[in-house]
Length: 386
Image 1 (cartoon, rainbow, N blue to C red):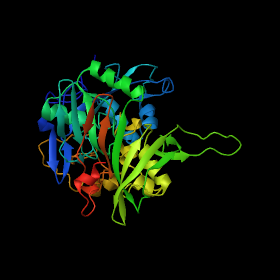
Image 2 (image 1 turned 45 degrees about the vertical axis):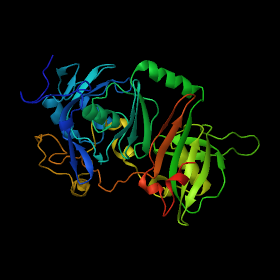
Image 3 (image 1 turned 90 degrees about the horizontal axis):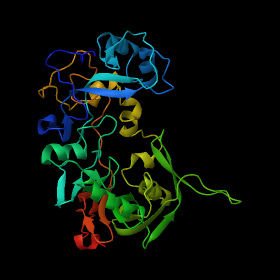
Image 4 (image 1 turned 180 degrees about the vertical axis):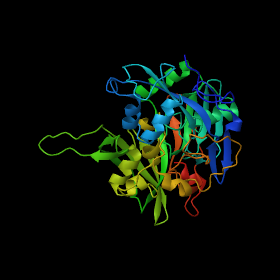
């Protein structure tokens, strides 16, 4: 078996390596991860079989150039079944491919992850916006699970529910598989009530408003649409979705709305609010059709083996506040060095004005404080808690 590439000082990390406190850098209101060497592992799919190793990566992982992949094969940063191969090597189904990379994770907003309740088998936290819950795509250490492990020693954790990366608020984790299974059974039985608050455009109607409309998620576009059945008994596309809304307060320009999703479809609250004509006031994805969220640009499955470096023109703007002297070694083959953040990530991201405030089960209830944006003018805390 070939040794991992690089000098004796290089330590190649895998998912088995836990995050540590010194992995993080806080700069200009963002949390960065010091770049690290990492072995991405994939297995050859049937549709990949018969391609050369260079053709495979050029066709499937377009974020990097063909010339990069040729160099990666020659220096052993692309290996098959633990062996160095030549650039014309033809891969076979199910073979293991290792891609050794200098990994730069995207930055997230640097809000604290506050622990709300820490019980014997449950911990609840207030999730800041922009931080993914668990490892996915280009995020591994810069996740709620990773940060809780690094800063509080909390592991293992089993997410009871999930929040979109840009959404903030209550997150519930079970500390063991048995407690997680009890939560799962209650969710499947429909025994949980969920409550969120959103800040929307305009004066939302008074009284409870119910939206019962199918939600159809387009994974390629990263967005959902509301689907209504046609005439003559024609069924709507998508999955059945029901959300109840109630206005808490308004200042004439925006409204704070309590959202109670009965079902749990992707972007359900966001797309149902758009359907009512009162979208979340800073939700670029549903305020217009032109926005391309970071989750589409940088964290798709296609970038897991080869993070994007296709937009070198964005380097100066995208990483303008990423310090380059934060104590990490640059890598000669890395297209992201000397910046902390990957090429192409801008610094203008803000959290979505959607916040999870309460989950209630048959014999338990967990709450999270309201965010600052949820208070309009002189609205009292008492009025906010319906």
